[in-house]
Each structure stands twice: as structure tokens, then as C-alpha cells.
Length: 551
Ligand SMILES: *[C@@H]1O[C@H](CO)[C@@H](O)[C@H](O)[C@H]1NC(C)=O
Image (cartoon, rainbow, N blue to C red):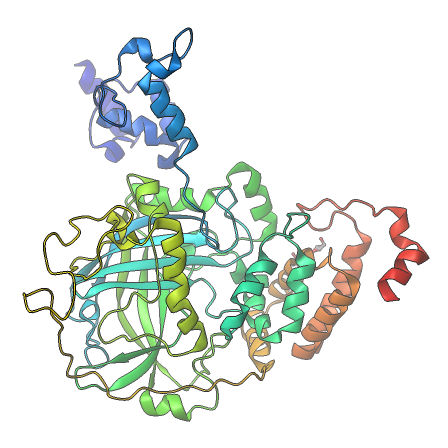
């Protein structure tokens, strides 16, 4: 009877459906707790609900059951306590190298479902057969933040998906801006340096950032996306994502098309103004993680429609712009868009380290019929991602649970674990005459490939078009300028002037707005939270310092 009464309470308060059980141990105090928390606050609580009894006897890593008198290190020969030795060595050893970029993130499991017939364009198994579902894992991340950082910064957010197709893993590493900063792969290292920390102060250095940006105007377009409202979405779910690069795809007759894939959010785009973001940072640094986790636990599964912008083999050679240039969008009216299907995320990882930290995403994980982009950036990425995963996780990173393809028969052996079955006793060299793995033949594979010559010229029309199409209202323009100024205030004056000159070349009105607001901001200390402006020491103004600067 008591159980029944509690049940009625639950239904009345509409809490029961989340738990699906009627647990008499949940009392009124717990109900208040449920009401003021979200699923991510309650993970431990939920674990206990699922496991009313302890899950077993504790052991050491080698399986030795731990006796209760070994749970202290006081007043004993510590080397006799193997439990203690195990704990200490585990405490000092479990770290693996942090990712160089995109270190902070989260992830979820889900599936991709084909909703449209695109066989005219591609043979790839994953995209063929309406209703076909392919399992997927997605890692979301922040481009610049280190592992301990915060989510609500104005920087690129990423959705990196690994599709476990019947023809191997297909990885699309997508950013929430549809363009990238540069198209010349030589910039990877220096650009990485300007967005990371200054080698002496170990702080983000915006003088370095704008110095680089203003000397490489092709970076302006991506910078403009970041300074606009789109630069900071309100959570991972509320943004579109773009693999950006132009992919070649082909159909079963060998006809080629060139495409840019787009993941369009089904949750609607929603952005976060800096004023709100700055309040969230100290209170909820993992705000994006919470949002994703909670929505999946609440069965409000986030999804994205996958579409592709298409240029034919003839179009791609005829258009009057470089369709492989990742710093620009394709011109309106030159391409058409085809819907493919939908990516849905419906399961949080049980263990973050096992799934999210060990996930090894690599854009060169491709499938038959999608041979991979042909530009400088992609060629660099082909070895860079694999190299960095080898450093981080070891040569066998594709044999780690979250990365294993559905089907695998390789000639590689051994190395740092995991090795899985290590191909057991199969022949380990080729060619062999003993029925080791053999090759397949793809009749539709073209005999030639397009070669690409890319121009170094910079087209300021590209950021201008963005500004005119996406930064339209007074509010959007005001926030664009304010977001820029927050990063431009601590910057050396001649770099500021160079930035203003460039912005003016893009749009004279934008240049005027930036100049005006920068002057205002410089006269009102504390303009740009969360930075605190400390009055400079007097000697910085001395003629001696000026002489050093200009002499
Ligand atoms: C830009 O910043 C100024 C100074 O803090 C503020 O008065 C103004 O409202 C801001 N503009 C927008 C559009 O947020």
C-alpha cells in the first residue's frame, strides 16, 4: 500500500516516466532533488537506482580480492599492501597525451539513416538503400580549449562523426563554420601557434592572433564567421556542421561529381551572445557537455540532416572560382543541393575515457567511391591525423573498441596493445600462396584523376559577401564589432591599424564602425569582460620605450 501511494505521488509530479520504476526508497526529499537537477547531475544517483546492491567485491588490477584491513596505509609496511601499491601507481600513470587541438569535447553514439535515393551520385554503401541504418559515433569538440577549459568561448566547434559502414569506417570531421582559415597547408603549424598560448606569458595572445590574421587576409572569412553571432552557438546541438572540403564522389558507371557535405541541425540554429556566455563560464564550464548529455538522457535525441552541394565534373572545371578553396563558399547559383539522410544520436557513452578520449577521428578514413579531396589541405591531413593518433594512442588505435571497423582483415601485426586477435595464424605477408586476405576489383574506378593548381591570390570579395549576407541588422553589426573589439583591445596599435585597414577594404562602413567603437572602448576600462584592464606602468610611456619601439 505504501508503495502504491508513492507511485501516485510520482505520476502526479510527472517524474516517474524518467525512471520507469516505482522505487519506494525515493522519498519527498529525493523528489525535490529530482526537481532541481538535470540528468547529468544525477548520474551517480541513477547508478544506485539501477544497482540496489554493491556490484561486487573490490579487487586489485590483477584480481586479488581486497581485505578490509588493507584499505588504509597507516601504521603498516606499505609494500605489503598490494592494494595501496596498485592505487598509487594507477594515480601516477593513467594519462595519455592531450590532443594538440580539439582537446576538450564530448561524444555520443547513434546512427545514420538514408532517407533519399542518391545512387545517381554515389556507390558508397552507407548512402544507398532508403531506410538503411549505419551505426555512428560522434565526438564534439572545442577547437582551442585544453582539456580543462570551458565550452562557451568564441571558437570553432566540431562534430566529428565516424560511420561504421560495411565498407570500412568513414569519418567526416566537421566544423560549425562552413569555411576554414587558410587553404595552404603550410599554415597548420604557425596558425596552431597563434591560437594557442604565448611561450613566455602562457596566455592566449591576441596580438599574435591579429598579427597573423592581418598578414594572411584569406583568414578573414573564417574570422568573420567567428566574430558574428554564428561564432558561438548555444550548445553543440544548436549548430550546423561542415566537413568543408570538396569531396569527389562517383556512381556505379564511374561518373564523378564534386560535393560539399553539410550537416543541418534539426534543433534549429541558436546562438549565444557574449554577455550571456561570460556568465556561464564560471558557473558551468561544461555547459555544452551538459546540454548534449541531458537531451539524450531525456530521450530528446538530437539529429542533423546530411545534404550535399553538388557540382558536376564539367561544372567544377568551368566555374569562375576555386571550388576546392576551403576559405570560400561556393557561389550561389552555381550548384544544387541534394538531401541524403539523417544522423541521430541516441546513446551517451557509459564511459567517457573509453569512448570519447580513445576515439581516433581521421578524415582520411574513407570508403570505396569517395576517394578523398585533392587539395593541399587534405593531402596534409591524410598523414597528420594518423600520425597524431599514433602518438596519442599508439599504432593500434584502430583496434581500440570505439574505432574498430565492422570488418577488418589486415597485414599489419603486433605493436602496443590492444592487438585484438592480431590476425591469429593467417599469412602475414603478401603476395602469399596460402589464402591470406586478397584484393577486390572496382570496375567503376576512373583511370585518371583531376589535378589542381591553386592560386595564392586573396579575394576580399569573399568576406565582404559574408558580411553583407549574414551581418545585416544593426544588432548583428553591433555585436560583430563588439566581439571583434573584445579581442582587439589588448593588441599593439600598429597591428590594430592594420586590422582596421583590412576591415575597411572589405567594407568602408564596417571600418568606420570598428574605428569608432575601438576608440570608445579604449576610453572605458573594463569594456571587455572577463579581461581586467590594469593601468600600464608609467615607464611604458617614456620616450626611451618609444625610441626602442620605433628606433
Ligand atoms: C556594444 O558594446 C557597447 C559598450 O559596452 C554597448 O553599449 C552596446 O550596447 C554593445 N552593442 C551591442 C549590439 O551589443
